Length: 115
Image (tube, rainbow, N blue to C red):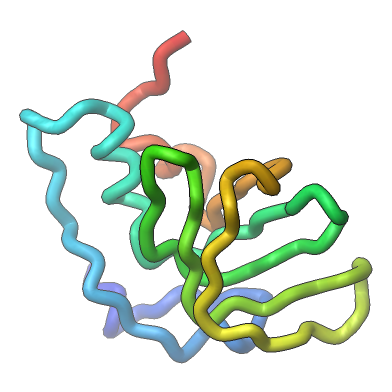
């Protein structure tokens, strides 16, 4: 089913009106990690950083240093408080405590992670 004709409604209303150019490519020649990263492009990410802030936005890219770039990012200082809108942000990998992607659990991995 096309994402544009049946969009998922997210709990955060800021995320409901975004269209991404996420390619639906699952190239057999790519490593499992790269296939997973490609699958996560344009998906909502929740990133907790070392000072306790929570950043929620759409995943744009990462690099070899584990830095993450999010678009349309909102910052939450405490649970239940209003968000501060940041826009595009680059989060240094050294400050990332955890990352979660807003997708059904059975669809998170394009390829099974290595044990």
